[in-house]
Image 1 (cartoon, rainbow over the protein chains, first blue to last red):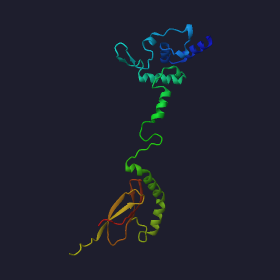
Image 2: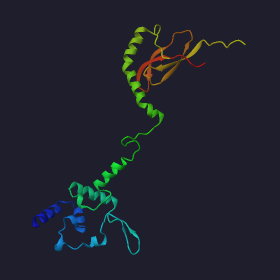
Image 3: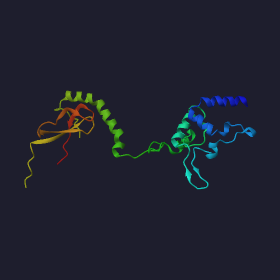
Image 4: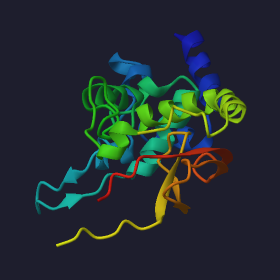
Length: 162
Length: 58
């Protein structure tokens, strides 16, 4: 039991301060000893079991905001991800797993960017690629056309546009 | 009633051969040969060949 505990302590010391503070106030059950030696919940845990979720006061029925705002949750999750301890944080919308699952379901939420989606667009937008291609090929053939026009002269030229 | 007399000078439309749709309009005698000039096309930003098109207006 002593060796893993030492490892956890060393790991905890390597974490950035906001994460250390968070784990001190809300120690994850996964790394706490169980049985008779289980420590009592901290004061923070007693007040708010999950600091990432809003809380309804059972007496007044009033809602309280999460202890950590969305921005701070995202910061914590980012830090934890960089240090490989994200699984120890409580569930949050900012967790990598949740975000990936959302991306799979909803895509980028920009119309036309998802797989198999397309937008109709204006008529000039629909014709833009073919027009650009037409201009490009015309410009590639331009030197040859100029050469032949100058050689033939306008008096004998027959290929006038319609 | 007699038909209106055809004017001696006509307006010639010269379209860009770069297929941009850009055109210049010049006056030329009806009897002269069609026009073909090197002119600037601002859409491709180059001097390209412009050739006269058939006048389709009445």
